[in-house]
Length: 371
Picture 1 (cartoon, rainbow, N blue to C red):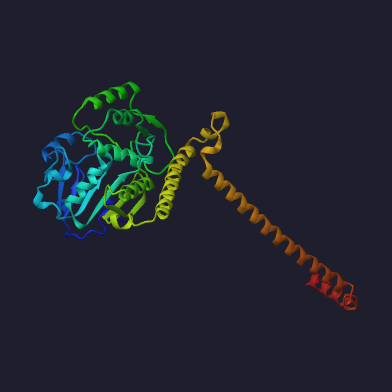
Picture 2 (cartoon, helix red, strand yellow):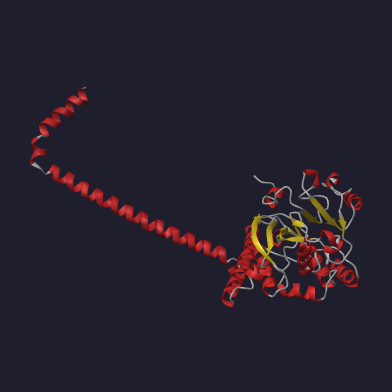
């Protein structure tokens, strides 16, 4: 079975020039493993070691030298211009959800990568981490952030991030399983303070600003590509990774997405909107698996929250009815065969041969008993 890193880099030749964004204490393509990689981070190696030295479970020996320190502006601004357009892969694990301006992130990738370069992303799935109660991000929100040239997060983002962050069974990320007990991490009063802190702060403070499920992310890329804000299209998405999903992107939205007819585009958008709802339904189903009382009328909710479960129950009932019909047909066949056999026995006993051989059968029976 492939490791997480092997899965992300499966299609990347060893000699590819990689730029990894924010590898922090756990690089996916470390130089120590022979990858031809460079890194961008917001601290030097020494700063990262100081930050994570006392964090449980972190091996600071894995922290590698930071090639380019980002201190604001576009990510591409941190890299010397003579290296623009020279990288084969831009690799980012759990990075884009922190970015104040998503469109700027994708534009920076376009500056750094060769024409045939690929973006490889590991993205947290909001259904299975502390973003659980956050609504999926929309294209309109992304457009607004870019129009405002956002370099830091707003007070509203700060409040929402802290007010609705949860743990499940004490974990901040848990993957695909029934809920083990959701708990709010912060108080409402703490969240209000965060609103004020983020609203007044002119520089970047870290939090999750964007929330995705696989289909909502694909929809976002489709719409941004169609309106010409980015030129990245999705090669593929690997959606079933529990607390995260993987996405591989390449240039070409200008050719593929913008060449779609209105009918074709709207059909694709509608499909992705529906899939987004179904993926959110999976989150609800895991919750109800552990708290079925949420759908009881006594609890104040009707069963509208579990249409998939209703459909599954209805399908099971139909299968049972079909099995019952088949069983009844088999019983009728057996009963018919039995009736025919009894008729044959009756006819045989009524025959002359049966009466004529009665003395011989009597003698044989006596001999058998004596024997």
